[in-house]
Amino acid sequence: MLDGLRKVNKSYPSLTTKVEESGEHVILGTGELYLDCVMHDLRKMYSEIDIKVADPVVTFCETVVETSSLKCFAETPNKKNKITMIAEPLEKGLAEDIENEVVQITWNRKKLGEFFQTKYDWDLLAARSIWAFGPDATGPNILVDDTLPSEVDKALLGSVKDSIVQGFQWGTREGPLCDELIRNVKFKILDAVVAQEPLHRGGGQIIPTARRVVYSAFLMATPRLMEPYYFVEVQAPADCVSAVYTVLARRRGHVTQDAPIPGSPLYTIKAFIPAIDSFGFETDLRTHTQGQAFSLSVFHHWQIVPGDPLDKSIVIRPLEPQPAPHLAREFMIKTRRRKGLSEDVSISKFFDDPMLLELAKQDVVLNYPM
View 1: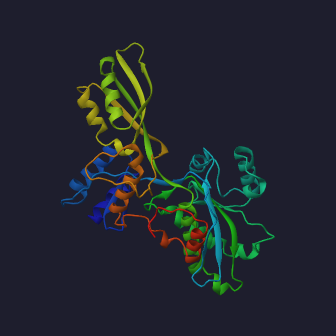
View 2: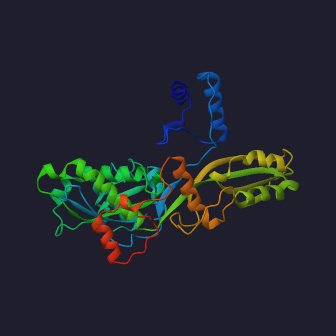
View 3: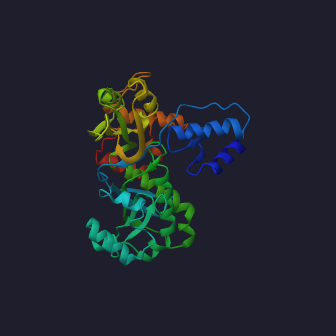
């Protein structure tokens, strides 16, 4: 099977394969039909074995909707270094600009600074203190050095910059909610205490600590899940339009436009539908319209899933459809189960003891398990 997976990976240009912690092999593709073709080739051409396939799943993203409620810090295991950060949402449209390479981290500081100043109204200091995009050069998150030279030794901080950036990249690649990519978040370094001796500030000390601070700042900033949405265009005869609306409404879709096609008996219906609710959409559509409707779908944008994924008061009942405010919690728990993670986010993994004491002092109410 592994040999077969390697071969389909080479045959299909936009295919990705990976292995989860649970040992499952996951194939990522652009749509249902595309994955159907991949599985056909894998079974018939590349490996003469029976392959058991799970239900299709959707990748999510993790984001925040507010600024961190307090400054989050973490000390390195040797207690010689300390990093303090906060997280906040990025400006609207900035994540897309980074992904589409409208702005690039490889630009010189002056050009980068001018872009953020003119387009997003950043102040000059912040615009010229961008350390990295993450989780890679076109990742939709930003790490900013917001420390002041009067308070922090910039030379010492510069000596551990690469390690902090690596911790930030690692953290944004696998978020704390369900190991999915973090998206649309700005992480600001507010303070840093760095050991004088190079021996005490190696990557082994700094990288995991930077990742923990990224996670704690993220969890303190009202985290939310994001899901991908498809743009769907359906062509159907006028008498089938109501059936198309019914199918879309059952799948959390919303219509943005419907209009007759001039010179024909057909209507065009344009809508957005969550990717997770799009499985079997085309078959459903054909069934309800006696095969008269034809649809095309393409990825369009990411949107926040309604509800708080960390609200422990929500009970997820098996085999029952969940109301809208429970969806984020349901998606998070099911994704964590699929990946072989514990059912809930444990904050003791990401918060040091001094940080937990600080939370208790400030009377921050946490509904996450310790």
